[in-house]
Amino acid sequence: MHLRLIVPPDRSERVLDGLVADPGVSSVIRVPGAAHRPAGDLIECDVTREATSDLLVRLKAEGLYEDGSVALTSTDSMPSRNAQAAEKAAPGAPDDAVIWDVVVDQAYNEAGGSWVYYVFLTLATMIASVAVVTDSSILVVGAMVVGPEFGVVAALAVGLFLRKGGLTKRSLMLLVKGFVLAIVLTALAALLARAVGWVDASDVTAARPLTGFIWRPDRWSAVVAVLAGCAGVLSQTAGRGNALVGVFISVTTVPAAGDLALSVALWAPHQIGGSAAQLGINLAGMTAAGVVTLLLQRVIWRSYLRVKQVRRAGARVEA
Image: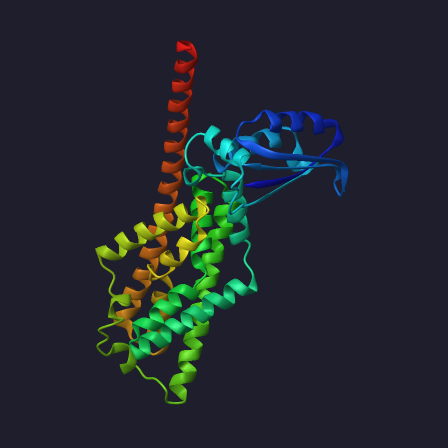
């Protein structure tokens, strides 16, 4: 990770000394008086993912979150010897470390909501409804990929795990409002399509060998939701966002919302309950799995660090 810090002059020397002394930090640079808002010294450095959380705790204690500035960006490659030495000095592997400040910041961003989120969720739900009408598995996958809901589900899991009531409430409300709006707009579109003769109730109630699973949840629906929730949260905390694409095409939230909208608009009452259950199972399963994944990551990482510290202490005694 690359850190860009703006440090008040009265703390600059102390922060700089701490960075230089940290074996997990390399490429430390200070430019005195370079920053203007907020005013202070500009300090930049590279730090291993494993050492980032502890470093951020120290920077927060120095008051940089309030009086200065802290910015993090990912570094794709650092082939220099200094960087490799810092990586060796840090405990564990980069993917095992969770940078909690980054996780929380991303969660608040996801839970902020925007018109783009509502548009994407509505478009994805409409694509899913077309998939139901045409019994197209390809369109089901397309709707899953377009759907933006997993980031909000992950934010809800973070809020529950860290007991942040504001984040939990915002995430939950955004999920509810997003799906309600998407379902209502899709249902209105379905009513319009029925009025012009494009669809009727038989399009929903007919045998659908490729998409019938959407409104018929079973135990495997819960299993897939849990596995997808674990994989999705793990990919975000480990900085492997590209793995989220695989999660998107594993869960049936958006397809269930599309089926629910059609079932209400074209009145297929025997499918309404199934679609709603599929949607609820997926959202609840992913959220619960996300909370458990975060808990396991924290427990395993802390246990690993304790073991590492004990071994280092034993090695010093022997020396």
